[in-house]
Length: 510
Image 1 (cartoon, rainbow, N blue to C red):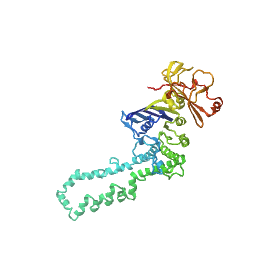
Image 2: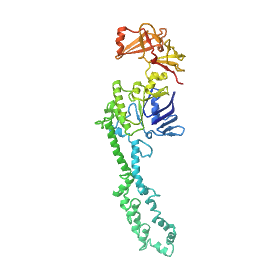
Image 3: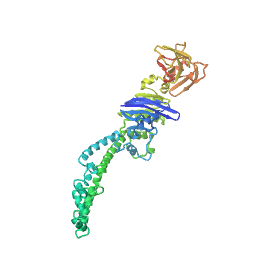
Image 4: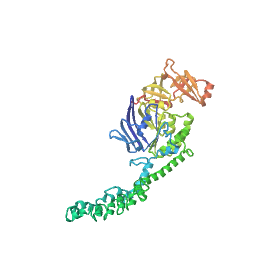
């Protein structure tokens, strides 16, 4: 599975350029609020149209500005879970789930479930059409009705007016026998012959248009044996025949079977998402977790090729967020398709995704495996998003020395410092307290402020007391298991930057 996105969109002063490729499995898009990550999802889903570019899902082009291709959202087979779940407020749980299953009568690709049903019914009707069924009744070139006016009797009847015998018949109106025939319109036999135009021998021929030899034949346009055929549209046999187009043997039968399949699928989703007993409830009668499960059930009901999760936990408190994350990820663990989730929360992304895309200021910066990017973010923005707290402008002196300009410190390393490095990052938990003499890669511990939290103590120091700007402040976060050491020995004299914790970054990739 593969999703290729290369699109641009300009909204007032904001410009978005998204360019990435996502494979199968779970991919997270991590970015700060307002960076364009939700807009990117909307363009993939077809809700927002890019100004230019191309989107391709599993070899199928969803959007191409040059080729003027823009597949409608309902035909993209993409599931979108909105931040507020977007349940229909006037529909019950089962109705909301069923709303995701639409019978595709357009002949265009829809959900896999709908597509399977279409293939099932098309096979049934293909044989019927070949035998002169629906098509033979409706198509003049292939059906019986089209031939009733021209052949086999239709063609001769036409010639009664214009053909060899027809010319003679025409002349009968004025010829020797024709004058008599003309008078037959009013003569003893003429009254009946007047109706020769319509009936076999008179009045009945008049009814050839309507009956079996009269009234029935009138309805022969619609049915085989007169009145019954005449009621092809409404009568006992006719009603069924009408339903060759829309009834049990046609569209109605298709709808009936689709309805059964739809009901079965809804039942499966209710069982899968633990919604039993809630089928008749409206959205406002559900908890947040239940609403989320209904929204996800509605998406999964039609087997989308890709599911887009638009910050599904952003409006939840921490306790509920943790529970719903566990529920959501558990329900999706066996989903065989592709999942894209956008979030500004690194913990959600780390917990959920296998692959990661970093976005910043309307641009896709880097991509790769989640753990690889957390360990080596490569850009300052990516480091910020993955939880790094300490940054300094960097000046590379040589392959093993770099000056941290904001910390007034020269760092030496055994590993080679990449060329182009202009920023240094260091995570707040990795700093090592040093008591006594100063060592390499150390800064003096000058406490600026502290924050004691239930499970963590945070200390903020300013190595250079001449600096008063925020960039010069270093954060040191101490886990609970080290509190006893601090209580016993007091605050350290220095903080050491261990080499394995130093992150070489580029402030900007451009």
